Length: 464
Ligand code: ASP
Ligand code: MG
Image 1 (cartoon, rainbow, N blue to C red):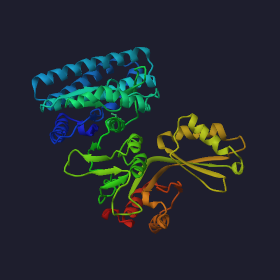
Image 2 (cartoon, helix red, strand yellow):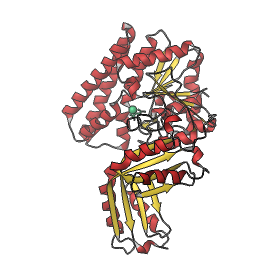
Image 3 (spheres, protein in one colour):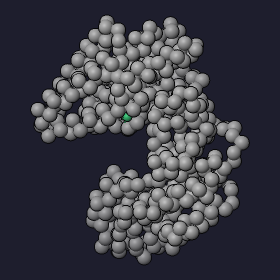
Image 4 (cartoon, helix red, strand yellow):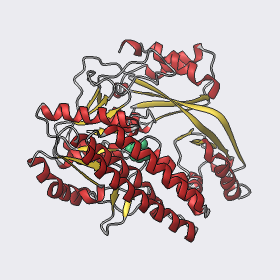
């Protein structure tokens, strides 16, 4: 079971988490828990680290007190038993003292490396796990908490986005955590954080607790991995835009992964990697409505519905870049030069489209990176004879239409684009990979919501 930041945001919610664990444990389930930092903590830690880099010692002191207060308050609400609560409060004090020392160190050095950033970010989960553990013990269950490092999760040293080394990880998890399960102790493992083979703390990418939970699921050959969150599951669209959006009862790994990548906010984009190989089902469930079955993600969903389109995502905060140059035509390596400039500047390309005429490439990137992307492209490419113009639009959104049965179904693209045309909305750019799992296109931002709604209606996703 994985509990995300909003599920453990306050002492009351942590109590609710403990109740859910206890209920299922009493039904005879053996449970391993992965837990995120209290809602917003990871962002706050990041800001504090940035402040420390600028030498702001007062801020460090204040931040330590703020973290101490926030977590002590959650502990005092989550844990009634005096003895357990005192023990947890001591852990919180010790951990926040260490956090202050680390941030003070950064103040003096005036430097923040990816390595030290990860170390600072690890404190969020190191502070939440003991509280969750205490709340479970408060219900007279046996529980013990571990950092990802103590539990044995080993990664490479790509700080901020480290990849787990699955073989040693599974071996160590079995060795260290396995015996607890035999003795009916519930292990609580910090999500998101791990360590290199040399024991240096790493993080596995924002939202990484999902990933931790599937790694744990694989190590213990779980029947199911339950990702507890604050919504009923993966939905056909964002209910804030489309109130009639429905929860999808079942999805394939492929579909769910596609949706995660497209920012349906369902889960960490790599979270499904470990379970796909082992065919372990993942279920997204709502902590506020545990009576709902949620969304079940498996290799072969056995739904009767054969809908081609299952979900729509609207991706805002993006920008489109157009690169024009007649000399790119028939010139091997010309696209490579464009990608190279962006790659070297650490700018991720989200979508690409180019036509057989070859004289124009369109790219979509994150909007906040636009200025940097344009200036680097101009410096590197203009005046070299290959590219004669780089233009951009920052008032666009991507609409992504997804579903595994789109593959091989005729007429899906035509229905999508006819729907858009009927709204008299212009499409700026289109991409469909040959996996045929999704069609993505760019429209002006002001039209994004209307387009998403019209397509939701056209494919009757409110009746799915
Ligand atoms: N606390 C981490 C984050 O906010 C990991 C997680 O929540 O899954 O990204
Ligand atoms: Mg989080």
